[in-house]
Image (tube, rainbow, N blue to C red; front, side):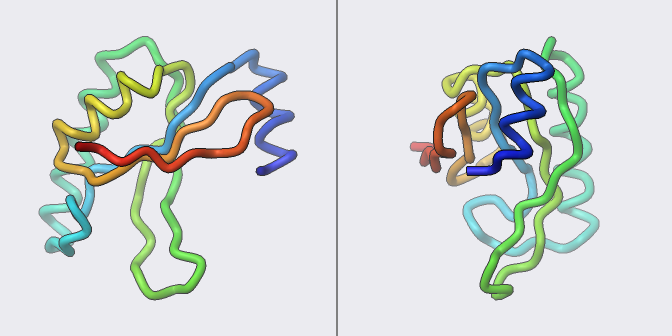
Length: 108
């Protein structure tokens, strides 16, 4: 849990959030240009929604996997984020609610 994140969510009155990417679907490394194109597609899909979004990154604390450009999405439900992740071929999302621990949600 991140006290700083929780303070920011509370200040902005954001009850739920998710971390979503479009790069390296199903943990298959893709060429940088392909990942940029996929990330742009995600940006366009997010712009269609009423959610607040901020640039973010998925970072492997072990340093064995490259950082993945992502988006922090505020105000979406788990189901909405999982649906979008499935559309993008992603294996999982990270999601959370105010006051709770983050959850890794696998996409079927």
